[in-house]
Image (tube, rainbow, N blue to C red; front, side, top):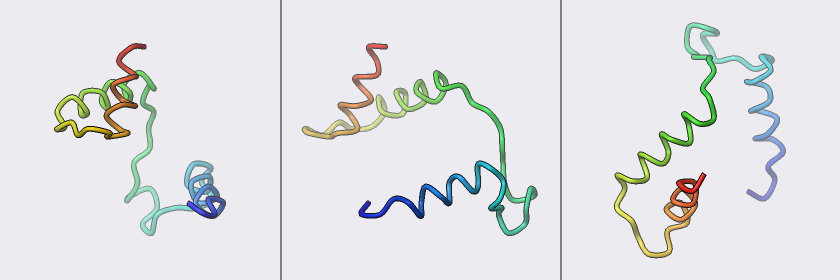
Length: 67
């Protein structure tokens, strides 16, 4: 992305609560998920994806299996 600042500010706004979805709390979900859980889900999803030679995501997620 040429200028990531607006996107970063938007994400900060959602995370810090000064930007909210149209219907407020009723249309958003908030919670906590451990990093290990997220990485495991990505690895499992990647294992189900057909692998393509030179696929950056495949290489990156496969590399996470070492941790």
